[in-house]
Amino acid sequence: MAWDAVQARMGVTKGTKRNSNDGASVVESINKSAEVSMHWYNGFSPKEQNAKNWALRKAIKAGTVSRPSGPCALCGDPNVPVEYHSEDYSKPYCWHPPAAYELCRHCHRLKLHKRFTNPGMWNAFKAHVRRGGYASDLTSTPAVRREFETYRSVPRGERMELRPLRRYHGVVREEWWEQLATIRPGENK
Image (cartoon, rainbow, N blue to C red; front, top):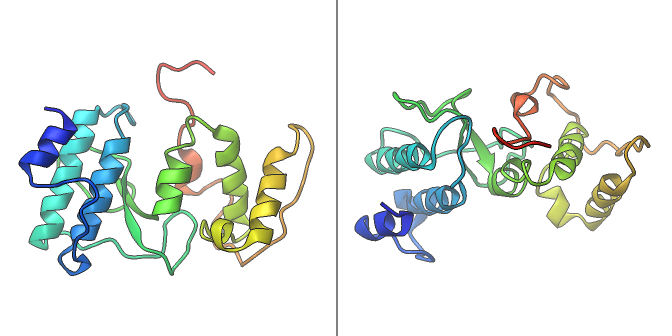
């Protein structure tokens, strides 16, 4: 069944504003995220991804799964809304790492899921996070954004260091997101 048909059956419409007290804003976030994930991911079909997203929606509504809460599991920003990102869509569903992570929308939609089509941006973003950068810094602080864009444009083989923004608490190259593929299975790059 097409995603729009599933949404219509469930009474979900695009652009509907909802009261965040009932978890509906999380549901809207899940719906938008699921619309984007129409590619196979980690060996899971779009149908399997959508099934887990719907199960999550129902579980949040029923109160059996808590709404996601920060900080973002990728950039570490403690002051932004977060949403679930799944790495494992197998049953029984799990809503905790390493099967699922709570990410800010910027990290989730504009960085993590775009790593396949823009691996250079993904690598630059990882460097930004490792300097203690939040995704929100790229939209709220023009100087940080300019430095990030300059870093992205440095030719391959040349080095540029990003100035530290905050203390980084991760172990470089051992982060969960460092292990993610940047090429979809079946693609040659």
